[in-house]
Image (cartoon, rainbow, N blue to C red; front, side):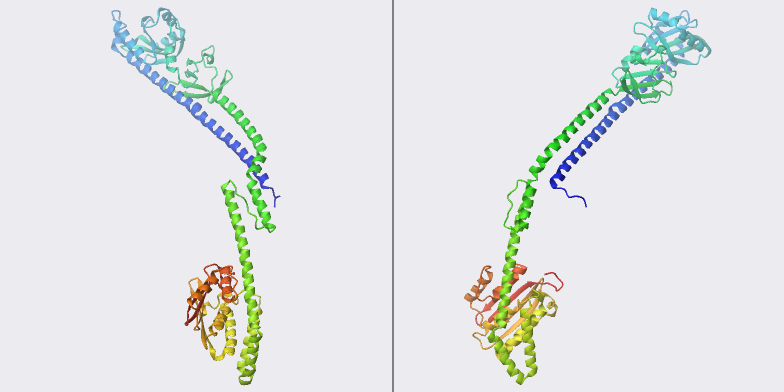
Length: 568
């Protein structure tokens, strides 16, 4: 068994444990919040942005692929390569197509000799286009494969906002042979407008060979125009000493890669600031709770100290001590219950003392009555004649007298079975019958089923004695009838005589004495029986007296049903 600790020390430990648990809970909640914040505002936001950009780029790539193919098969465009062709209608269609797209494009229409016959490029940019080696290589390749559309990165440093990287080129055939070429080159500024104000901090578009088509950050492009910090399959990247979350998506049709980078520097700052803040709060709370624990416990546990003091006073025998009122309702309830318990203890002690005193007086009275020289002389005198006349009857009287004396002075048990107590009453009536002879008759009618029930010792005999003494005062003869029945959970014993009875005034006076808890009447027989029954079992038990002047008296004794093996 562990060493006992005081409740104050226990409460201080509990305070510290709760604070530590609260601190751990705050850190867990904070980390869970930051993880949720990272998932929602970094990972999900970057993924959504990447999907949006990917869908847009894929859509525009498809539009230009289908558009350049449709133009290459257009009859009006084919006629534009003849010497007398009117190019205004063709130029109008190419302008409208280019301007109708979200990503604007530069268009160039070349004849078979790679000469420009229609374009929206400025003069200076036209020369840059014609002298670009990658463009010439693409035109030469398409001459041998006129049904193919070239799409790829061609870095041409156009001026005046016409700079472009992604270029579409297709040969225009007439009669199965190439008669010219159509070129669409997407403007980088137009792509930049569309990519502006996206959720991602950096957006990079590359082809299958890692050539950069578009980038919102030129620091990611090397001298060869390639993406120099390729993250591969990694989901994070440190760029310029700043961390980024990376999402990469490869378009199935064009093999272009869409790479979006979202800075996590703000989340890092929140984690660092929140961690230091929680750490500071935790240290403050731990220091504060250790400083205030003694004051808190001393103030709020004073109620327990008061209760402990009251229990100690009670243990030392001071049952008159009462606890004063308390502001806390729970402790006030304890105090009230303690005070009520002490009051009940006082009442029980008083009742037990009174019951013991009255039982003592009852037994003393019985002893005095049974050892009364006159009573003993009458018994001995009757025995003298009975021995001469009827020895067997004399023997029964001797046995009854001995049983009566033995039962009267036996202090071993306060409760006996009804059968035992009725046996004592029978011995008593037998001796009284010998004394009063023809003047006394009695009948005992007790249900056999209630004989095992327990009753207080010597509780019936005083009622019988009262009937004999007061019934024969002014009568030549009386008959006493003793009955016993069970009514629900009560045992009802009745002692009834046909003596002179009581008038209404004397009956009222006797009932008033029985109801007075502090009465000390001269004739204490009936009163002691009544008080002992009430002290043992409660106010609903005891004696009920009925009498009519000249017609006898009826005394009912009510006690609870108690079996022999029940605790009393």
